[in-house]
Length: 267
Image 1 (tube, rainbow, N blue to C red):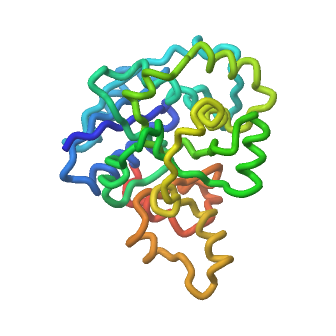
Image 2: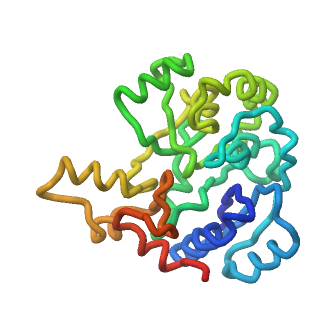
């Protein structure tokens, strides 16, 4: 079965993107993938290199993004304009694409994604995980002036209901919000998706589909007699995500999930 994958990268993330894509391929050998790469600075040499690395069940297609479109939108070094690309994907993808799985490049897919990819949207626009609960969910609702039925999700792993998003997305309205509310935004793309679509998100288990070392540490503080270890991760988790600045390719990495990246690291 062919599956659609969406990514947004720049030159600095090519090797990490390839590690992620190779992990996806290796653990989903019965699937073929159309991978749409949104970018602003990949050249022909970059593309040739990437296509020489990816496995046979991966087909890469490129969507050039003109960063002048985002002039005036807030950004910082850690969150460049690439974070906005996924928001505008529904209007740029081929009409044949009705659903797509967005994947960040700082993650590894080490089990089969069929259940996640084929999740019934049940009328929702996104299938995703949230990294927060309780007070922080409330705080973000207040900050973004949305209702109790809105959820703040992590945008690094999400199945997007493209056919429905095409019907409801208003890019002009989103651009206006981004440019006029930069002072109140923290995680810019996540703020936008919560503000406009947070009431149409189907939440799934983060420990299964968006697990980070910080989650393991938090879990183990509460479950000291039955901690989450690598055996548990191998058996129960599908996607590990190296959130924040804790990256496995850095010398100061802290955690137990580094080996998943090492297996697919591009040298």
